[in-house]
Image (cartoon, rainbow, N blue to C red):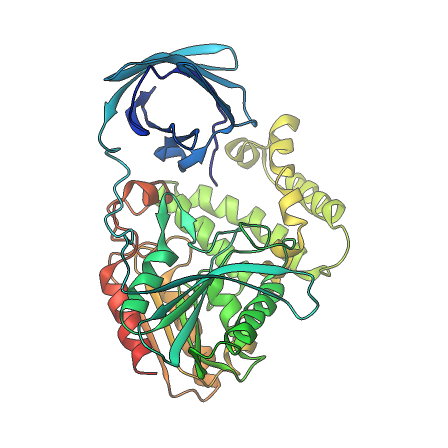
Length: 455
C-alpha cells in the first residue's frame, strides 16, 4: 500500500561540472531527497515514509540552468533554484504551496545500502532471455555463474506479490541481487528474472499458478546451459514466491529442493485475515475494532472463495457488502466509517482489485494439498516480527503439509527479530522497510547458503 506522490519538476541547477548530485531536506515532516544526473539527463525523487525511492521523473528536459520532469498521477509542482550548496524552491500540490529547502549532500542519510553488490565481481554476470513453450512470453533475466567450468548447482529466485523486477527492488532495496551475489560467491549459480510486464519480460499479469509455469520455463532454459547441473536446480521463493515454488515443484521432477522465505503454510483467505488483524494490532487498534474489521473481511473473502475464478464478481461482492451493512448497528458502521454513503463508496473501490484473477486465486489457495505431495528437501524460513506472513502459523502449515507427504528432508526455522523482508527491525512496521539500511539479514543469508550447499 504505497502512496505515490506525483511531481512536476522545474528547477535551476546552475552551471556545474559535476554529473550527479544529491539534495536532502524535508517537506512538511517527511524526509525528502533529490538526485540529479546531468550526464544522462535524469532526476529521481525520494520520499521514504511514503515508500518512494529512486522514483524517476519522466519527460525530463535540461535547458540552460533548469530541469523539467514529471510524474503524472497527482497535481504537484516543484520549482526552485540550486546553487553549489543548496536547493530552495516551492512544492505546490493541488494549488497549495509549501516551501522546500534542500541541502547538497554527499549521500542521502536515509538511503544507505551497505549490502548493495559492487563490481568487480568474482563471478560471471550474464543477461539472458528465453521464452515460454508457445513463444508468447519473453523473459529477461540475469544469470550469475561462479568461476570455473561447472556444472553448478543452480537456484531460481521467485519474487513476492506485485510485479517486481529481477532484483525484487522494494523500498530502495534489491534483495534478490544481494542474495544472488552471496550465493554465487559461494559457488552456486543463480537465475533471477523480471516478472511479467516488468523490465525485459513481456506478458500480462496472471495468477500464482501462471507464475509457476513461468518458473518451469526458467528451469527448461537452465537445462540448456552446459554450466548448470540439471539434477541440482532448486527454487528460492519469497512471500508469494513461497506459494509458486511448491506449485512448480509438484509439476516437475527437475526441482531438486525448495527454500521458502516467508511463504504460505495457511490458506490465502486465512493469511489475509491474520495479516489485517496483525497490522491493526501493531497500529494500536483495540480488539473490538479489529473484530469488526474481521467480520467484514470474513464475509467478503468467503464470497470470493465460493465463486468461480472466471467471470465478473463485482455485483456479488457489492451485494455481500450491502447485506453486511444492513446487519450492523450504527455504532459499528460509524467506527468503520460506513455510516454514510460516501464512506461506503470508499470500501467499494477495493472491489475492483478483488475482482482480479490473481486476487481470487490467492484467496482460494490452500497450500496443504500441494505441500502434502512434496518429498524433496525444503527449508522454510520466517522472521518472528513478520506482520504480513505470520511466522508460527505458516511454519506450522509447512510442517503439517510436508509431514503428511512423508517428507523426511525438511526444516522450518523462525528467525528472531526479522521482518517480512528479512531485515533486523526496530518498529517492525512496513513503513520502516525503506528506512532500514540492512537489505537482507546476514544470518538468514548464511543459513540459506549453507543449507543449499548441502543439497
